[in-house]
Length: 270
Image (cartoon, rainbow, N blue to C red; front, side):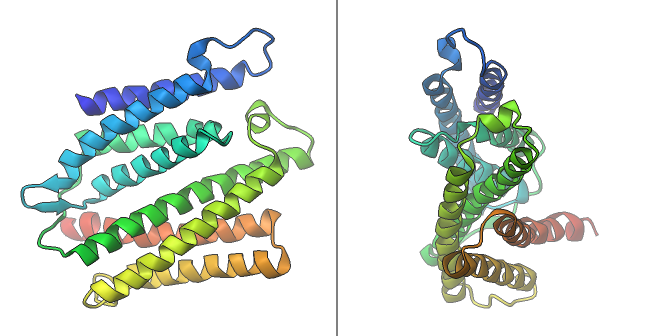
């Protein structure tokens, strides 16, 4: 029941954001339900209900459930929570048009079409820390990837002098680029800590069931490190920054979810 209410609120927020987008140029004052405070409040209530749902999904009597659908729900929950908190002081709430329905979908799949459980029992605090930081790092870099896609669209429209309603609702190009590199820097720091804690607390990070995840994670880390180096020393921006950001995110996505899909879905069916 909680998941149904949370999904409904996520979708309601999406509809209200679309309403704001469509009526952006209207001279009539926006009704209270289309205002930013009301939408953010609804979104935060949805996040709170999603939190309660995740508590039952992740924590089982046998241990921590890190199935692919549970992790997707957890990741999208964290992405949404970060977006709403940042939107309180920064005009980035329109990103919710993409993020909120994705979160609703992930929550719906985890609630009604869950994959087989992947229970981790008797894990120590160090490993829990590694898992938590890894998920936070992935979530922050996911927001960076979404920003990079929107930055590419925004840049394309401005170059062709076709700024659509959605593009005009975003912050200026320079602000979007600044927010992008802030997200990448934070995500890179967290990803570095995740790799370090993995090396410290996992018995063998190159074990057969972890080797693909480890290699892809390291390559992704190198991609983001190169991007930040290029930004600092050579002023990389625009299309160059977008390509490096999306390349690093694709590698990270394959590391986090590609390996889980192969292990939990493909191999288990054989």
